[in-house]
Image 1: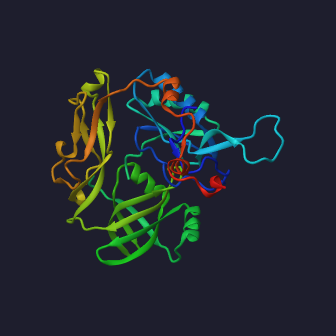
Image 2: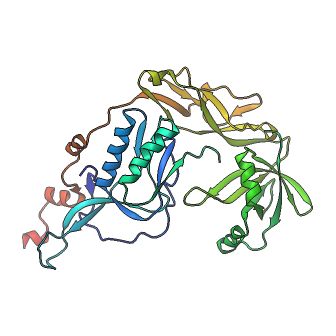
Image 3: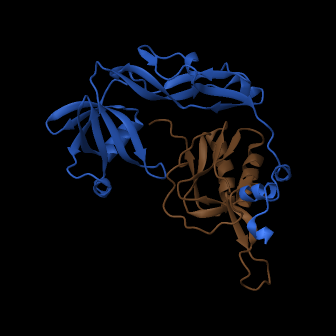
Length: 139
Length: 217
């Protein structure tokens, strides 16, 4: 498990609901190109790590990859062959809550075609539909 | 940018998000006009012409509002959640002779010297606030990054601005840096850095202090 918080207030969390669209982190802020989520979903730390590896591997140490999502939410599960009850299961993995519009990955320092190819590879690792976007320079 | 974009505007009698949605359905963009110590007026603009004008770099508008013609400057734009469509515009009344403060995008030109040495150009700010006459607003400020080597920085005070344009942002504003790229870490390396389970804030405090009532019982 590559990404998880260092300190948390509570070890376990309820599932929650994800309503609406992203009202912030919905534009490219650090790099030149980005990958924007088009669906609502939990993205696991494993998905994020797979995306990071895919992008850095493709870029061959050219350019910089920015990860704009962080898995803050613990997801718990019960062990196999366990009867129901006896309390909530132990945290198994961590997820980032992503809503439509959220920019998940950004790339800077490379040309558009290279960035596009790298982000397509990242998009394949994501459990949701994504689109390629550019930084908005004007107003 | 000398020519102003000519647009016809309609006054919006009803305001609010519900009515704004209806305005957008009709192919128009809701906007607000303010400035010159006059009452703000809610208007709507033709979406196609307005967006087309913005794509061509127009910032100054010549808006016909009823029988009146007024010069306006695009102050702010609001986009939808995907950043695709403009959903609202803020326009400010201006005179041609007036000096205004506007944000202008920065355009980086050339390949930095540092990139040949294994560095990467990072753009920290992509727009600058400048002060100039309404007719002299530049479409963009072109900044040459050819001479930037690894470890060099470019600040707002270092760049040459067009004639009649003054810098309104702080001259210390960092625009561009060129830094060496650190080697990407492997998954195994990252796993070593991250603890197996995160520290729980409340539990750590309990361990240090006196045992709780439950533990005593």
